[in-house]
Length: 316
Length: 271
Image (tube, rainbow over all chains, first blue to last red; front, side):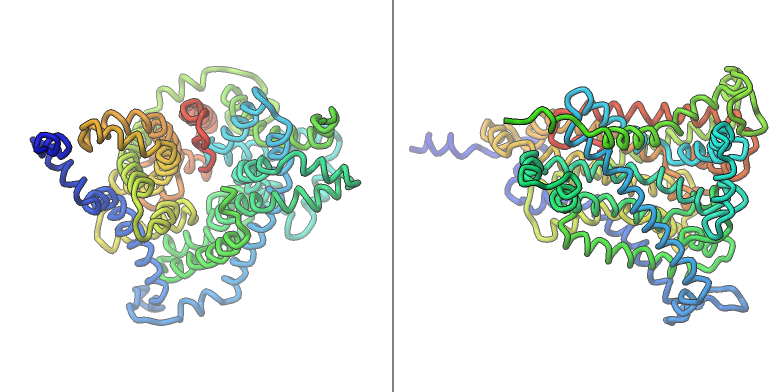
């Protein structure tokens, strides 16, 4: 009897590692603390701490005369945020983000649909890598490529010239708001680059959603007399919508916070990111910069809440 | 019975998909062309001539080498840090049940879900409040923060596929926790960690927005590129550097893909 008991209940391990291992086995919460401690310290304390410190600063104000921060609780900075010029910046950025998201979805959908439904074997791999490589290639290089393309002596002008369509380009540039002196200093240019840089983030979520649509559902729709347009409208689109919303989280959020693209290709009118950058840098108004960062946080918070209700996170 | 017709894509769809892919790839291919142009004052298209002399010029530039070395150093240390922290976090979330588990996943994703400028300015003001001077280490700290999520995502996906009975079997056969980790868990998650590490490296190597806030006087390769973008001084060298950056980032992405392609979740599907 004792022999059996001894062989079932193993003796304690020897050595520091053995004893430590036994300790963790008996106290799983100690192991959990060891595992979670370092990442929580980093993300929870360093990162979240900085984030809260920043948000806190938005409730301070800046002294107009000395330029120093006045550490007293006030909503004056938020009042400043809602002034006409700043509201203009916010509306401009949100409109741009919405337009970029919409057009990105339009371009991404056919790629995602083809990859999900028709591409097989080798083609599937090619499609996948064909999406992944531009998605991951350098952000600045992508912007640089468009600087080359949109330049006056660049390929786009050359192309329009060869096709004798320069009048079309000029007519477009003459349109107020979206036009400008040349494409590289107009909203159109900013918009194209935004779409180019963020659109790849849309494809894979849509593809993931479409891959879960059974083929026979589409066949059933056409068997019941649905035209391709009706099938798309009533079957495919509603099922792909969570994927589109999931992808739009990226395109929307990334456009909201970007300050490099409008700085390099665009008009002199500011976007939220540029305003934050200018306020914290040259203007030295950290409270207003902090208040500006609250805008994308609030918008993204609402957006994520809506997306969650639509079930977009299952498509990620 | 399936009709033959439903397996063939409509022409319109084919054109739209091909057009979309072309839109994504042509600008990057142009970078390759411009690296060889003889024109050095403008972005003239078509290039008046082709030459390889700019590669030699770029090779001899000490500022390019300094930026490249700094970028590689930062990316290596940030990746190593992210590997440790991301794996720990993934192990805790996937192997145990505890209160607030969902919150941890959200916390890990936050640095990448919020626009980079917010992470950047938050860290910057925290550094200045704590009187930490900008240095190599402040850059690393910023980069590691958003690299954790890439490692974490890869590791969590792989941990989910390891069956718990494998670990129990190892324990039943008398292995202690460390031996189980060394001989059972590590071989199983190894490729996922390698893939996650490669993606983290690529992410850090390319990062510019957070870096502009957390770097002092040093310039990483993206910062060098950014300065050239705002005030172009040496276009031919920039063209060559842009091409090299494209090639350098492609390698880890391809590597990560081949390491994880058999799994249910392929690395790099999200950035």
